[in-house]
Amino acid sequence: MLERTLSIIKPDAVQKRVIGEILRRFEAAGLRIAAAKMLRLSPDTAARFYAVHRERPFYQDLVRFMSSGPVLVAVLEGENAIARNREIMGPTDSTKAPKGTIRGDFGTDVEKNAVHGSDGPDTAKWEIAFFFSESEIC
Image (cartoon, rainbow, N blue to C red):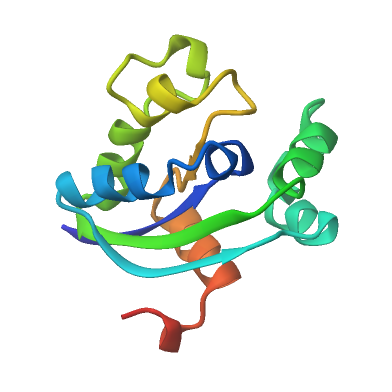
């Protein structure tokens, strides 16, 4: 099934200068980059985007981290894009992610894990609309 999913290359991966390698991996796995833009999230924008985690103990640290530097947000499109992206990323905790996955190769822990990806179709739809208008998606 053809799907779209949101990907965020997080501040730690941007700082490591691995944006190109991460995008290459998505494309090599058959995902098409349908939209992309680099931006710096304000603390308010990061708080709104991650509002689902508001009650969790890591929420403030996550907002602080995600607004600490530039990110690259992208819409990935392809067959089973959500599951495929999650497979390419690897487990959320980079210390448990196998080598060869993005988080296993570029992340350092559960927070600084290089990338974010939508976890399901409803989330993907909401997350994509948070950052992109339909006219920005090719």
